[in-house]
Image 1 (cartoon, rainbow, N blue to C red):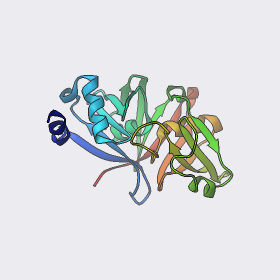
Image 2: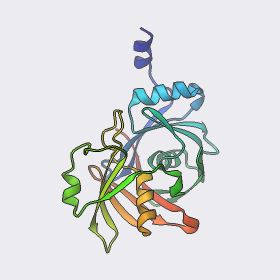
Image 3: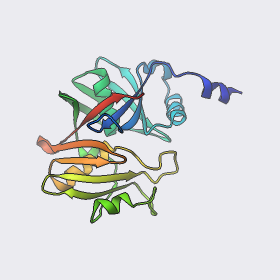
Image 4: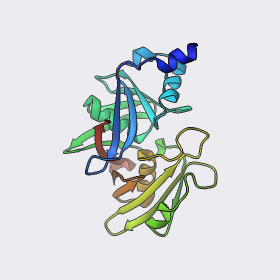
Length: 225
């Protein structure tokens, strides 16, 4: 009975966003943001809520003025993640956000929200290049194998346009990640150039190398319907 009550209980101060939307406002990766983290102070309670919601990530805001946030995916807590921080920065309208990995600077540029982060904050992932976007599109979800896979191919190498799909390949509810900022950071660091990435069903991620080995990551954010 207790579990049933917890599943039915509405979530306090929850905003649901879509991060890295396409130019027409569609697609994007779903993000839950709990504006008042005090309602879920303990890590087990936060993890339980993230598991219950089932989004790629859920953010708990501990200090909205300073941008202090805590990030959870189903099954684990994350010291850093790309799409949650772009979404939280857009929602909170702050100059920086703070996570366990460090301080992440924010800027707004028209319809795009940008963060600046270090690729070494991202856990190792397999970046596998394919010969064509069609090969990436044809992959099963998930592809066979173990470990986090970021599958990509050039759509237009001269223009820096990339087609990508992402597969956590963990024992969890997320089979394919619609838009993965952390993997985009790693790919940008690997290639050493700015990228315009179309991921998943049509989400758009923009990246650019920044000074001191950092990477800028940008995208559009919308409230989910």
